[in-house]
Image 1: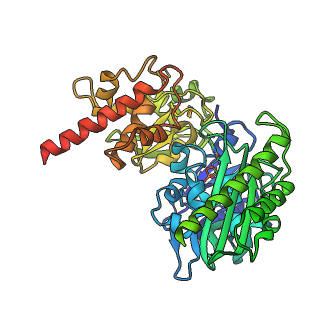
Image 2: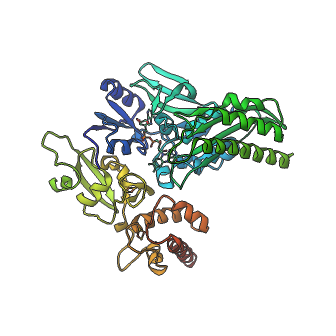
Image 3: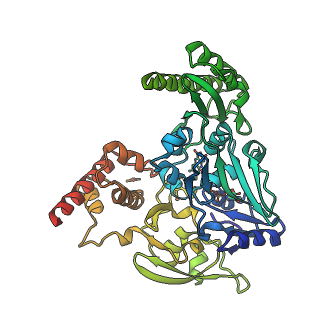
Amino acid sequence: MYPSRFSYESPKTVQEAISLLDRSGGEAKILAGGQSLIPMLKLRFASPEMLVDINGIPGLDYLRVDPDGTLRIGALCRHEDLEFSTTLANTHPTLAAAADLVADPIVRTRGTFVGSVCHADPQGDWAATMVALGGKIVAQGPQGRREIDVRDFVLGPFANALAYNEIAVEAVIPGAKGTARGGYLKLERRVGDFATASVAVALDMAGATVSHAGCALAGVGGRTIDANEAISVLQGKPLTAENIEAAAEAVAAVAEPRTDHRGSADYKRHIVKTFVTRLLTNIAKSEQKAA
Amino acid sequence: MSSLYDEVAPTPGADVPVRRVTIDVNGQKRTVDVEPRLLLAHLLRQGLALTGTHTGCDTTSCGACTVLFDGRPAKSCTMFAVQADGHAVETVEGMGSASGLHPVQEGFKEEHGLQCGFCTPGMMLTAKALLERNPDPTEDEVRWALSGNLCRCTGYQNIVNAVLWAAKKMRDEQTQEA
Ligand SMILES: Cc1cc2nc3c(=O)[nH]c(=O)nc-3n(C[C@H](O)[C@H](O)[C@H](O)COP(=O)(O)OP(=O)(O)OC[C@H]3O[C@@H](n4cnc5c(N)ncnc54)[C@H](O)[C@@H]3O)c2cc1C
Ligand code: FES
Ligand code: FES
């Protein structure tokens, strides 16, 4: 299979990339890891007139933590850069847990975190972690930069809030206000499959009390499911069995699963509840050990 | 250049812009004119006659088309040849020769790591990249690293054995040199 014809540009700066997008008047697409876009081009689900390949722009491949704990993920930070990070598990356990569950190891050498969030696949893993963690996307266009809350960024299946002449230059994830605890569980039929159902949980703990709780789901709705309000029943409470049960019930209730070849709607909702329970119970156990 | 496109895409007319790219393929600089939509797998197989890179699924799923792009495994059915301009691509042809096999190739021979051989080039390149990062992997780590490469024949056990064999051989060679 091969795509329809396009012209190819490989700018060396973000500015240059933006002016290419601007001049194209909406007929150009950014090429990052290409692990979603190129398959779509080959199937001719997309046929842009121009590809703006950002892989040659230096300085976009960073994964760094600011002194205040804010994590910054540049547009060319690959999935495997997160997977092999030696510090991420301490600062952002939710991301660390998801990193080796995204696609397969070869796709992870090319695919990017930011590209995945831009792609806005309802089954995408990174968008779910971003929603649970309260992340933002920094967009840059001819008028400069703006920060977009991920919940306003992911608009629907395969739709994001970028204007045609904007590039997502980085993802920003705030640091935890207490001790960062979290995890990611994903049910997949085999390695490299998209989620049948997956759950991202991110907690800030103040001693034994949950000071902030975040949660989001992938694979169980037409878009990333924001379960932050549902899990907020944990706010200010300890992780007791009853509180965990209540949170798992509340989160499962906001899933919007549909029956398909990956399973029935009931089954997927059950998985969500089981995963929330498991994630929170694991955190409770490790808190007890630490205490 | 016309034969380059015959099998994969209509031959571009004079009006179709091509890009001149220089790619380090197995240590040799190759300069070719490519239409931007030409996939790296097609350039390697049809354009450069390096048919060791196989295309299995053509949908980014099987890993048969894996090459090393600047040392890291990449699915060449999911990259454009233009993207390789100024970069290094290693294919199975670059791993070793019949008289001087790479330890990973030797391992596949010793441990019967292949049956039909279709997945083998991709398997071996992924394994090579793994051993460069992790010279002493556990069996689980080998299975994990190879989980993006599908094999329809072997049931994987002998492939895993082959990679562990190669890892040991490479470590032994290291200690002998030291
Ligand atoms: C076999 C296979 C299995 C997969 N499994 C999973 C999985 O389990 N979970 C999962 O989450 N994903 C999965 N993926 C998708 C993979 O994670 C992609 O890497 C990711 O969705 C897109 O990132 P990319 O960098 O490859 O983006 P591209 O493919 O380059 O781009 C995707 C889209 O985002 C746009 N875009 C990219 N970067 C930017 C930017 N900086 N600014 C503006 N727009 C941008 C592009 O224009 C395009 O529309 C899988 C892919 C494959 C091939
Ligand atoms: S042919 Fe490229 S992944 Fe199957
Ligand atoms: S040996 Fe036949 S596909 Fe692996």
